Image (cartoon, rainbow, N blue to C red):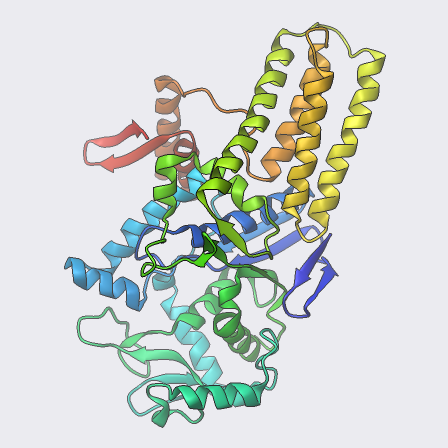
Length: 469
């Protein structure tokens, strides 16, 4: 399996640190509003990477954070006259709903920045002790960039160019920095902002330190894959490398993966242009499976253009897969009993070539566009070789093959029938039992499973209420 490593700018064979295991960190959203379709791309792309690695037999420890303390969250809280925690809690829940709608699996761990402050203070203290950080008179702590000789290795930026660029920007607070390139690890509180006690001042962490600490806590000093949108390469991921490697004395991540930007009707998405689209808005017109299909129908490193025409084309294409799966499922239940006949066994061998093509595409830097093309070859083959005379065993074997390939992509081949009230109540009861046993991961899994099936839960004083959405 080869993947493109941003660090080396070439495709490399994937070799994990520990055989059979993958440690993967993906930068999650800042939760101050409903997620937009730009946020959705890395969620879908790297969920698919995880799914394929699991299909290949790897045990994947997948960590994706929620940034729940940030200037935008504070601004929203002030506007609404509520606490920052209330804002972040609300939008984490909304984000989970959208992720379930897109069939994005819950991470092994979804850490929250605000619950990892002690770890951040410890890392900053270590960086100061090693001479990589210093405190200014007002309590702001900066990372000393010039002491990390490899700074710029991920973004492939030249230090001299960076320095002249930063000087030209005249960064605010530059007069108290030793160097204009130095970045914030800890900053003093402002009036009305949430804050934590630290050895330097009452304040809060800088953005970059959060991911370094959460990755270290849940995955260790060295990880296999760090991923996110290409807008994070510099400065966020560059700064993460500097902090982590200076603190831990080890290579932070072996492989770096970045998805390309998403445009709307060939223009950059922005509120000022009036072309800003949230995932929730898309869900009002389309099943979010259509959005997922659309995202995967291009290579993750290629810029992607969102348009109504392309979404309609994706909807129609996905329906072809769903129709083929429904037909195979029907034949599986109504076809001739008994073993496959000789010609059918030969046809199954032939069909396996499409699965091999699928794997070949995914092994080549997760080329989901070519993988989907292989799925359509299988669909066409199934449509032309399955008839009223086919055995149930033959239709069933093709159905299983199609369902498995779709599942790797996070696409639901066979549209689920509406859940019965009894099934819903049983799952809710199982969730309550999991919560009592403090198995919150299982409780979250059940809630997300229900969401994917169109059932939304609400915890109230009278108990758990549910509704179809």
